[in-house]
Length: 200
Image (tube, rainbow, N blue to C red; front, side):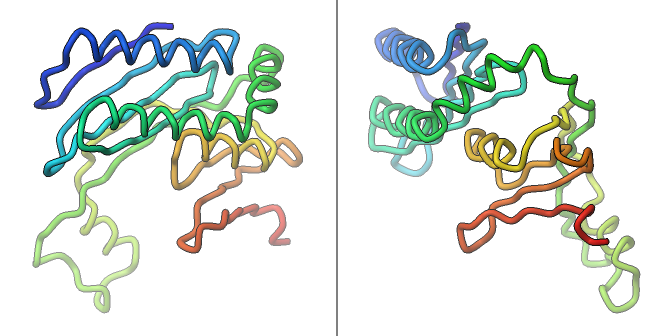
């Protein structure tokens, strides 16, 4: 597995880089036949170290873990434990996913955008404009754009992927009916599911 370890305003020792590589190789060896790559980023937030781990575990399968602690080693341990905990929960299904990936239909290509909220006081007021105009005025600047995929999944597999990647929302094509569906993490901690085909 290719592992990239970097720091944002943090000096990283060779010992820490070696420790991170060995720990991620161990996790990958335990849960996957072969993970593709991992990116580990250390930073500082107030008086704490932060660690963000992103693992590309296989075709279309991403995992994410975040940690925060008083030192970089403990922050990494926290983030790695988040990933290991999610993997333990989904271990059998992750292995099944890896074996079935080659036989699945290719996912639909899409683009993902991140919009920045504008702080313009002259933007249209909600009472004088349509919702689309308010949204266009409020979030007018694209700050990030990336290719993404809309994969064909069961609802339970979509929830698993959303959990593993630590994302708040995931759009997918429902394998039961071919429709675009969305699963998302609700504010109460439960998972919401939107299925337009059930509206009829």
